Figure (cartoon, rainbow, N blue to C red):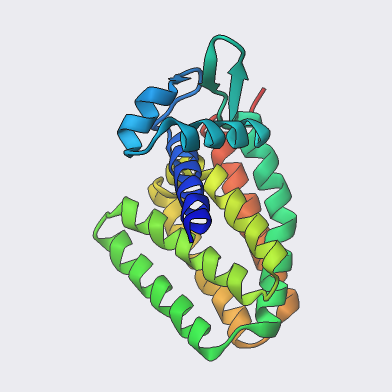
Length: 218
């Protein structure tokens, strides 16, 4: 029981620090001091130290002997690379989801689209971004592949700052919600080819919008 609690603690600390990096709370080049993080998270330094080592393996942190850890984070090229990879895998997710999606999941997607339109009209961009993530998460789950779901959700986390910037743009937000609606309609009609094509195009449009804002350019 103790060992399980320790594993849970380590996982929680790891995810909290990683989310802090990906959300921009801990910015690129910032020093991550074990004692400061431990105090902030209300834990001992041991799980913090282990989390930082794991984050170094993910390439989000660099640990320099006798100097400590600092944030590397996600570069603009990383964002572009992730979206390029997603432009292929998003289509696969939509195809598999169309083949396996349940009526309950279709209803959840329908509700998300309706809520997105409502929040667009209220100019609540933060809610639109949140709902955008929920839409994709349901599609990943519906794809019925643990490996694909894990990979896609991680990609989604890595580019959360870029996503917020892109979806928060009024024109892009409106188009994004419309694209979600079209993907949903294809899934309702069990048209896997169309759902795959629309999902791929959806991510390509996100990339184009990000490039207009300067992301991923050398």
